[in-house]
Length: 420
Ligand code: AMP
Ligand code: GLY
Image 1: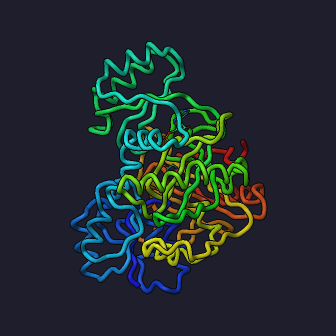
Image 2 (image 1 turned 180 degrees about the horizontal axis):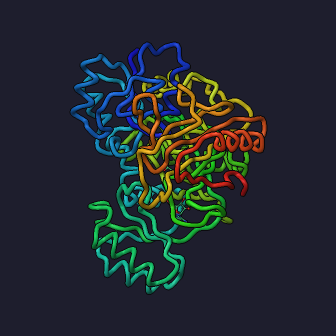
């Protein structure tokens, strides 16, 4: 099989390194990929959202199967276009990807089908949104842009002034473009957060090992939100009892609701959950693998990932055993100085071998490029250094030892991944 993975970050690198273990794959391509992915697959310089370019390339090299990993191409209909061209795909079509693409859609879906989530109201007028927040007069207030916003569309406002700023910049200044035409104003929930990625073919749901992201830039969950500064798996808060409740009250009802809506979901459905005092509630749905959750979940997968992708695509997931290794994984993200604000790129990275790896860990490249033989920084999140161990402590110790052996100017990373 000729397989194409679409995307170019740490998540795609983790998918590719797992697919490399499959005996069914003859050639592995990635578009656009990055400096580390180039060591494991043939990178092709086509933007992840360039639908016409992708279809033309898939035809030219006879791609049999494509994995569409990021949210934007999924929401734009990349799967629909590739399937129309005869390429089998792992990932939801445009109609199903709306579960991530529109928070108004997903909140209304949960309300209609009784799936536990934070209470909310939707507004398309900034004045009405603000007067509602003022009337409620309970802070923190949670304000969310309706559409995709690079993971930055959520504001937790601590007072009226911050709420007014958020509504103004999302709905009037349109800092996220048309994604801010509507906002969701939501009840503030508390409790540990859990990410659960599930394989689903629209009939069967097979949850992966649970994980925990660390979204804030600073130790002790301080500073602004990022795309994710590190992850651990499994998530210690996700007990078998919680898992059962989530399956019965959230996972299966969501998949069934999407069927009812005529939008069957096939691919990886990501549940961002909060374990509140009143039980687990959905914070967000993503229509794809999480980043950097994938970097700790897939190293624990025993079953051939490509066989799972095929089973999902052919709607026979019920008959496939998906098996996991015991033990734990930890991923520490090494970021560019200044990230998530302005940062410099093009800096040389030292401590990597000729495969872009380091001893004792797997180095997933997120924002890197190759310049001759040298790996350079090329993004905010640069590397996700992952290790597995029998215990969480062992995995963390190995991951941090790996981090300390790698360097670039200005590098920063959290020192407290997995310590909560
Ligand atoms: P999201 O981009 O939807 O994942 O939201 C980013 C982060 O904001 C989440 O990981 C939570 O920590 C926080 N968050 C989102 N919605 C709520 C809520 N209703 N209550 C409390 N925190 C929230
Ligand atoms: N790590 C959060 C996400 O992938 O959206």
